[in-house]
Image 1 (tube, rainbow, N blue to C red):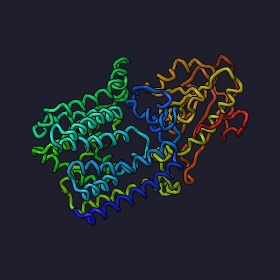
Image 2: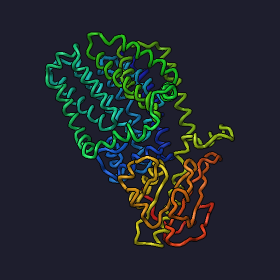
Image 3: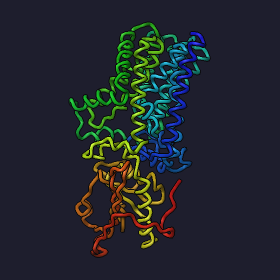
Image 4: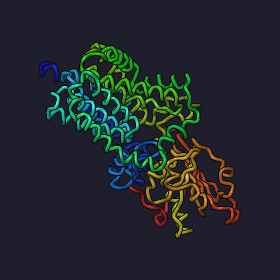
Length: 521
């Protein structure tokens, strides 16, 4: 392909990248943490090899962004804004390494960037971001090794780094193990037999396994708590059902976008048909698509708490294969990109333009609007800090204790308060907070500050029969003129201290410089 033919896609991808980067950097200064992001930020305060939900890599990343502590939403999102903008370019390089032309590689990157779960989802600080980088780079490097002469320096280096990145993918998310399985199946296949006779593919996988050893050792020492949490504690309602299957299908329509999903189905069908070709790179792309896809679809159809983005790693091989074969028509590629970008623009507009809430009917339940996760917490945290100042003033020898009713609330509190307060959690199932601040410890404490919001109404008398409320504040938060959430903050003391008439206030306490803890950056 001539340079003139490559210039158009190159300029298009460059322009889209700059536009996305500008929007993401703007968003970084205007939105807070989503609930899951707040939990990963809290990981930074507790360095561990793994946590109940994920291996420890995201905690390492959060700690690095936060310079040893929990990062602020702005700091985290400035990093993810740049990283998510770079990822499509990495995919273009991987497609080129797999044998595609530069033009086809750039077009594949444009279509890839048009997927909402890439353009929107990877703006968040989650394990999916390092997983996407490690998985994509590993595909490109493994393709480079397979295309090189067996035993050459180029092949050896590519296989070594591909194996290490497979280990990094495992350290990011458990589903990264499916990438390692795909690489093993590829290296053991007939088209790759010349490479399989050299030590380099297997040495690379061994190096990747060494990355995972600390995580495996930590889990084994504690009785595999992550596995138990993911497969037992959170799966009380699990089981194959039409509801779960429908969630998988309709979730992909939203996360991939309808037209792009059609294109993905067509590419996936072609890849399955080509799986028996005597082509090592095709075998690589098939193995790293089919094995994760089948495993993750079965898991998603079984688990009631499955999320649509669980399938995303399996789909990363498809744009690379499409670039290699140019199997899609130009019209379908353009339609896919256009529909995806329209959906992406709508999501960013909904989150960044508060007045968009006026499009909802008056009867709409604000709990269903996920954008409300991102607003209100700065005001709530300011109020909590002021209440903690009152608690510390009345008993300066006791460390202030904050408790929430569910991990989402506890995570937001812990990420924002950092080490300024002890944060306990009263979630229905055990979570990481039970290890960080066990329930028996905070339940036996003197005074606690209980924080909840309108998503989690709590009967305090029933939940804390040995305590009574001495003061309660209600903090309504509005978005675009509509009530988004109401936070309730209550001081609870043991009944042994004597009954008092509780005071209820509809506004937060007035700021007082002498008793308000400074906000963390």
